[in-house]
Image 1 (tube, one colour):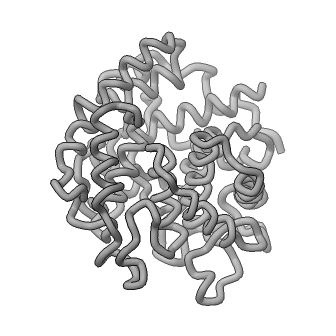
Image 2 (cartoon, rainbow, N blue to C red; image 1 turned 45 degrees about the vertical axis):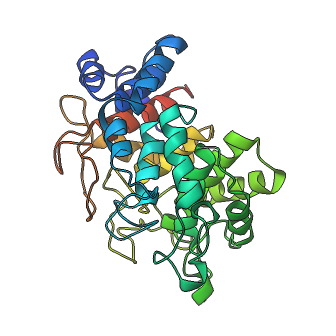
Amino acid sequence: MTTHPSKWQDPEPISSVIQWLLDSDPAIRWQVMRDLTNTPAHEVAAERARVATEGWGARLLALQEADGRWGGAAWNHGWNSTMHVLWLLCHLGIDPASAEARRAVGLVRDHVTWQGSGPPECDDNRFFEGEVEPCINGQVAMAGAYFGQDVHGIVDRLCNEQLSDGGWNCEAPNGSARSSFNTTICVLEALLEYERTTGGRPEVTEACLRGQDFLLERRLLRRRSTGEVIEQDRTDGTVWTRFAFPTWWHYDVLRGLDFLRSAGVTPDERVAEAIELVASKRDNEGRWPLEPRYSGVMPVELDEGEGQPSRWNTLRALRVLDWYLKRY
């Protein structure tokens, strides 16, 4: 069944929502200007340049330790580690060519290893060499590719770890033959960023396309075997129909749609149900709430809190709906 946009949304977001989004941090403003308004490119670039020196981006950079790490680790369960902060900086859209970003990433490249943060056999690995779990390696490779680092080795490993159904699973070494949405989205975001920054390679493109099909064949939230909606993740109980930011390693429907949009996939009936879900969460003022907030220590607060209108979810939802509307 094809979903027509007139059933669920006006063609344009109301001006008060756009103004609310613009009345925010440079990280939000420049993406709103790029994705939701007709702002000239030079003005978008000028706003983006402020991410490294103002607001959330500058505050995250200031938390880096002299040895290049954040949170004292390459990775941790507290969500304030080097990997997590680099993930945030990528999503804030900090210009990787800025002096501030180059300095921070150079410290990571030259000094940070996986000592104490991963399996013992990875202790001597430099940060951008990654460790063994594809969900973690996906996030490392995404950040590395974004910041122009050599993540060729991780990308090769990820391509070789793709399962027969088109996705990935951190439990594959323990015998799992079915892919995980959580792991798959982390890897797909890495492969897409690698293709953007390096021009890609045929085997990477093929892996990315197979991964996209994994999501689309399941309509982003259903079991392929039975067609049933997956109510929650069996690993940690995450509900995929509730939208968080930051998502970290967790999959949800909005994250899946935003990936497909970013990858330039042409939307078809396989995303219609997911689009309906996103549209249904819009409140009377045209905004989307922050639903779950995952446990851990946020190095910098990016939203007003769980249950409150979220600029990040609103930005991402609006650009996903716009992507879908453009098919008409």
